Length: 132
Image (cartoon, rainbow, N blue to C red; front, side):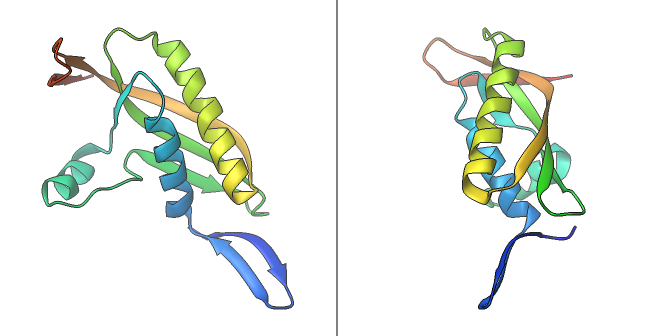
């Protein structure tokens, strides 16, 4: 993966690594009500058990060859009781706004994959996550 080059001047160039874009997307997505967690699969789960917080887990970023556009694929675990289509639309809007605002890249697509549902007790404590 080649980093996105967003600027060039007499002083040099500015590049943004795809992982940085993924972290921006992950933070924007987890701020949306109805998102319980990002889903990073087995490797992401192992990293978290070892004490490492992976802010880009479950996110894939593709930057176009001209380095002016990007697309994002996110895998989430939704909270039970929220309308998934509405949550997905809000994620798409939030992620697009965050990436475009912070990097200047045009976001061409934000694809949301719901891989599970999280059920919570009335006291807010997480009870279990069911993955499809």
